[in-house]
Length: 451
Image (cartoon, rainbow, N blue to C red):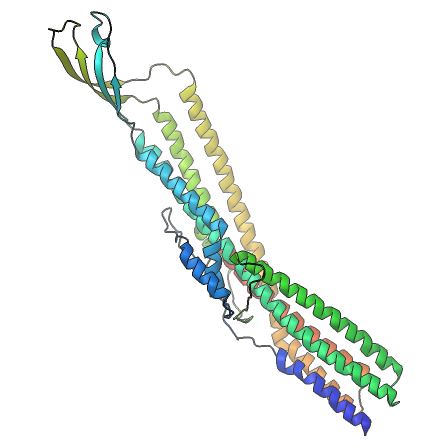
């Protein structure tokens, strides 16, 4: 009679394992944050959120409200130092573009002549303006492309930040599931240990049951400590991405989800070629280097000038002053190597940038291919769980419980079935997190948005 009571108590201790870790394959959809379109060199790139907006969002994170993935992305963008530095580089490139479009400044020379009959060297006032011929266009176009490249770099930094946040968020969700499973496992291990001691005292079971349940209890306690540490680490990573204090409370509002997706590798490679921001940036800089060559060559072209002169014709007071307006050309005659060296340097820079572009294309194709292969493998692993492994582990546990209740299974068989079920649940949570991370990584590899 005593043994039956303890058996029922043991089975009650296992019940939460079913109720709290049952998988939900469609509890939330995966967030696909939109990135700026970049099919042309002048693609619009969104500006970073204002500091006040970022502060407001950061305050909402610390208000103990559940943090969704979408909100996490917004907060991270607002507090990202990488995005801020990229935005500053855009401002610098815009300033260089403005300078490239400006012509030479007007100069004013004020002088007083001494001596007599100095001819053209006795001007009191000289106003000069050089007018460039055939130089401004190449300089401006090159600066525009450099500005575009800076914008693509800013968008690429946003894509990388989004992946980092999503990966950290999914890892944090995984640790929450593992922590929950570890708590349940510890409760179950305590139930086993207590039941084993009582049954051993009553003479109903051998001491091996007590020893085994004690080992399982120690393992469950160690697993809980590790799960808690892992969860704290993942939340610390999220706080760092949000620029939050280390002690700021953080509660996640989404769940790990799974929805099988199919993609064509060739189509992804084509998409990446037109949307990856590192490729777009490298192409813009490659074009800019060609305009830099043209700008260097244009330095050998003549410039026009306009001069307004006010001069004293003679030093005698009775002699009137004279004024004149001159228009002419400034023609470079001898180049002692400065302009020629500048052209050679521009050509070398263009060759270097072309090599950088070729290498970027190669690494981008490899990135897409390897990320795609990893995504396919992880998706197959998740489908293995949903296709039978989870159901089989639960069936095994149910059969072990029923068998133990009716005396058909041993204590150790029930303990092993419970361990198998718990491990399958933990492995499934890891596979879900890996699938969501692999999907986010695939989006990053193709430029931020999958077809």
